[in-house]
Image (tube, rainbow, N blue to C red; front, side, top):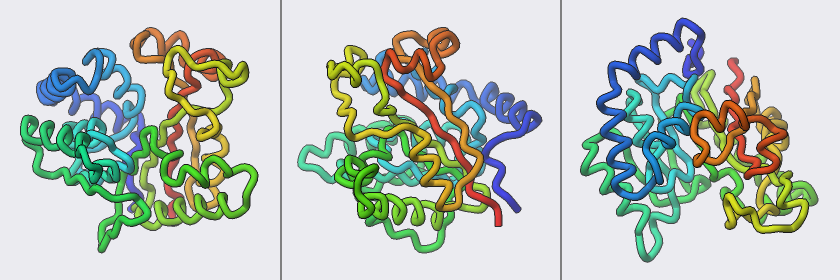
Length: 266
């Protein structure tokens, strides 16, 4: 049976009803994340999560969060009913272990026992039997192999590196699995003028690509039905996403997008 992690209209109503009943848990999650300083405002975080996962049904699903950082998205998946969540974050093995500490602090407070963090790269992840219903790459797709990402459009070898990564993602995805990818496109007003972006000064534009590049490559490896949404900086909240959440306006902010696809059913 195909995975139904991207909801139909009827299914979306069921997900919305579940989230409404589960709002106490979601509120507790938002309060903890804000208290730990992992977001600037819990209402804006809620708006962002609704934007990213509003049509994703996490209930009873297995989730792989690649490059999951301190676990914000992993714990949200658990909060929304995921059966099992694996978070891969290689920086959690660093000397300071700050991300792992943050992850574990969230776990001690939220008390979910179905989330595991692994301090390894995706390429080193050994999965014995599981297939994942939902795979998340939130601001991490360009970090899977930064050298290959930088040279993706010029070097065949770099493209081969990413094709192998995407083939591996496909092999770990359940039939009909839902893929959620977020990143910034390199096509941006400030990048074109060679200026530091005031909304996110740390963006290194040469390490990013347009969502269509990723969608085309993933399509070659068995993922279909690409949907691209554009976001605005969190400071503008939900109204900002309604008014500014399109390709043309995103160009003047951070060019941040959310690409969703599904694994092709056999």
